[in-house]
Image (cartoon, rainbow, N blue to C red; front, side):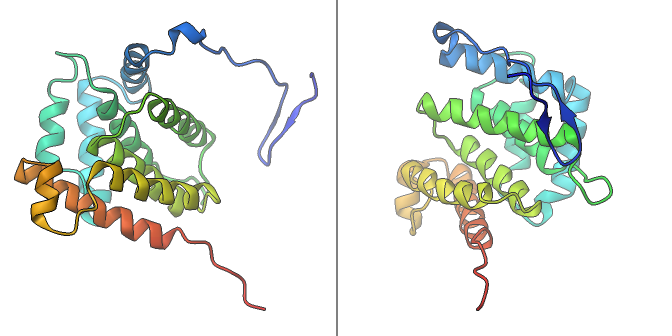
Length: 212
C-alpha cells in the first residue's frame, strides 16, 4: 500500500483520494461541483471571457462547432444564475483543448485537468445527461486526445461521441429530421456542425494498423 507510484516524470507516495459519500452523488451536487471547478481552474468572469476568446480565436477557426453568440450569452449569466452541468463541462473542455504543451509535452497540470474532466463526463453519463453542449464538450475532449496521441482513449471517446450524437438526434441527414430534435434553426445548424466534427474526429481517431 505504501509503494511509490512510478510515472515517466515523477514518483510519489500514494494516498487515498477523497471520495464523495454515495448519498452525495446527485445531479444537483454534480452540477454545483462542476460550476465550482470552473471558477477554481479557470477563474472569475474576466478570466472566463479571456479563455473563451482564446478558444474562438484559435481552435474554433478550424473546428467551428460551438456558436460564439450563444456561448457568450450563456457565459454572461454564469454568475447570475446556476450554470447547467453541460455548460460547465463545455467550458472546462474549451479551456483544456487550448492548453499549450511545454517542450512538446503535456504539462502535469494539464494532464490532471484532463483526468478530472474524464471523470466528470462519466458522472454526467451516469445521471443520463445527453445534450448538445455536452456533446460539444465530448468532441473537444476527443480533439485534445487525438492532438496529444492519448490512445486508446481517443478511439474509445470518438466512438462514444457517435452514439451520443445519434441518441441526441444530431446525426439526422435531412434538415426536416434535424428540426424534429432541434426546432430552433440556429441550434439545428449548430448541431449539424457538431455532427460533422464528430464524424471527422471519429475518422481521425482510428488507430493505424502496422503493415507487415
